[in-house]
Each structure stands twice: as structure tokens, then as C-alpha cells.
Image (cartoon, rainbow, N blue to C red):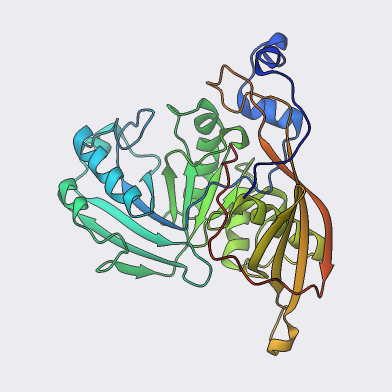
Length: 341
């Protein structure tokens, strides 16, 4: 995919003092002040491999944790080499003694691709055995229960802990078996951030008051459009287009808009979906929808608490939505995008 379109931006050096001049603020506070848009900001991951790692996490949860660093590095290399995204998880509310006494290392293999969604759980008694666990979850127990992961990775960004912990506490009370703390998800400025598996639905700016109802909606097959960032298995442009379509048509079903293909011309992205009517209906009830999205660059900003250099980030706005525009033949390969941070 071509690089994002947009006009000239200020030199980075000139931008460095834009926000700090008013005094330092956490990145999530600055994001709220700017009203940074949420749609199209989910991190990418079609398949995930989650590992329960009790205890404290450093900046990198697999390399600075109770895992031996060499083992953690080998595990991350193995997972990422297979095109899978690693994620550390742990239960909330455990005492230091309980964390030190970890005798079992649970793992979960998640497929978040549309039409392939599944979660498989397993466990090993020796973390070295994780190097031989099938990454597709073969041999694990399939689960139909949702998996809730809230980022509380304080050493990566303080906003994740400050805003994430109240959310994970509220969810652990309402859904104790399904709720986990997790390592860095991306988009620290949108804390509290969380992801719902198996569909890989990212949410941001979640509060402890709203979070339990979000899970009720997910169990009912619905998204919460006001906090929705996107689906991890889709490119950022497609995430944004799907979110815009859901709002335009008032259709909050998780699978309401099936992605077909995506083209770009002069900075305008045309994203093609099939929109299925709600309720039992024949195949003829599926209608094509074309969502046109304009990609721009923001003003330079500090996207994390630790950032020292302000940089622009990609943003998306709705241009138009049309029905009954047939999708072109899909490309041979999915375009590769730069990440949204």
C-alpha cells in the first residue's frame, strides 16, 4: 500500500516542544485532550500465542520476567517466526507468594481470522516445554468462552497500569475465569486498552464502569462502537472502514461486515465489504458496501509517556459510503501498512 497521503507537517524538531511547553501530562491524558480518533488503531495479529507468566514484567514481558531470558528470547523467536503474535498474561489480584509459586504455565493458541475464530488452552509444568507446544494449539482443549485481556504493562507505559488496573479489577469481579492482565497491546495513549478473543476486538479508553457491559455485548455478538478500535486480523484502513460502516448503518454485530478487498487511489482508500442483513435471511440479503476512507497524518504528537520526540501518526476519516458497488477482484497479496501507534 502506498504511504499515507497528507500535506506537509512541521519539522519534528519544531514540534518537540508543542505539548511539553504546557507541562508534562500522561500520554492518555494528552490523547483525550486532542480527541485522537479510535477507529483503525488496533494492533495487527491474525493468530496469537498467549503464555501465563506470573510475577513482575520488565519492559519486555518475555525477556524480563520469571522466565529465563534465553528461554524467553527463544520462545518469542519461535512464535514470531511462525507469523504469530506473542502475548504474556497473568491473573490479577494474586499475592507475591502466589506468583512466586507458579507451578503450571498455561498457554492459549488463538486464531482471530474471520471464519476461523478459536481458542485452545493447554499447560506445561516446565516452561522449557513451551518450545515444543504446537503453536496452532493442537492437543489443547478448545474453549467457547471469551478471553478478556486488559493491558496493565506498567514498565512499558504507566498509563496502561494506572488506567488498566481499575478495568481489569472490575472485569475480574464480573468475569473471573475469562479475565487476564496482559502485556503490551499497542496504543498506550488509548489506555485503558483491552482485546477480546477469539475475534481479536480492540477497545480503548475503557472505564471500570463500562467494562462489564462491554463483555455482555460481546457475548451477545455485538461490538461497542464508541470504544471500538478495530479487529486485529484486519489492516488499519480496513478496521477504520468497518467501524465507519457499523456507525453509518447502526449495525453493531461483530460479523455484520465481511471484508472483501481494498484499493487506493490519490490518498483515498476504497474498502469493499459484504453486509449481511440481521436475522435469518437468504443469501440474497447480503449486499455489497463500499466505504471510502481518507488517510491523513496528525500534527506531531507524543504517542507514549516515554516518548521524547513528537511524531505524526496515521488517522482516518470517512469520505463516503455506497451500497451496491461490486468489489473488484481481490489482490493477490494483502497490502502491508505502517503501524498506527
